[in-house]
Length: 335
Image (cartoon, rainbow, N blue to C red; front, side):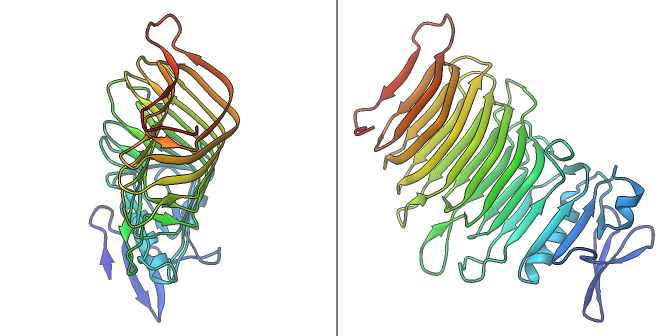
């Protein structure tokens, strides 16, 4: 048996079946009701929702129950983690990890009931969700609140047995709202994605954060990218932030497609899109409605080539001197 000291939840096996004993003495079989799923009820969920839950959170360190469900699903080859309506408080990130093996990824699905129905609130300076080890993750229908230096979703690339470097692949991120609370002094990033590969992102809002999205290729072993980002809205606050920052540090971040990317800033000195890095960022294609509003610098290709920007509506910071909509570095070409 495994006991959570925070709320008294006990996980144990009975006759080969995984079960949970709650602090009130009631017992439930894990994954009841939906094939391959664990259902987790928020502390503020209704009695009806709690009655059918595999885990019931108490509003303190709810990441313990969620991560226990993730670990249980992974141990069985993968599965779904379903979150009830309500708020979940995180003292540590929800951690989704693969097996560093593309032939045995242990796919995890983390799904809520809507961006303003199921909400994850991370403690100050704590990341909401972390992904690594060649994970396959499907994350959808959630709101994530971050503060301080926290990151809504962070991924970290690692080497597999064949010396390829990836954080996640064949994954999906849909219907998400990441909120930084509109605190101008915080340094939060909505997403910081190291070594993403062959995945899709759709219908995502990042608002009230100092910075929107950072995407990093930091491996000489292989290029990262081959992703599709569709229907993004990013609103940043504070001074000198970035709505989108793509950094090819060692290898090349390339072949990402951006459809309907819209960003604006409520602060000063901000940059809409920055592409660069020591190795250069290539083949980012922005199509559809590329909207950028009120930035000091609109589109900056500091180092890169073969990037395409199909602009619909772009404006610089009203009344400010030194604005530049398009900036190309000395090593940039064919954009």
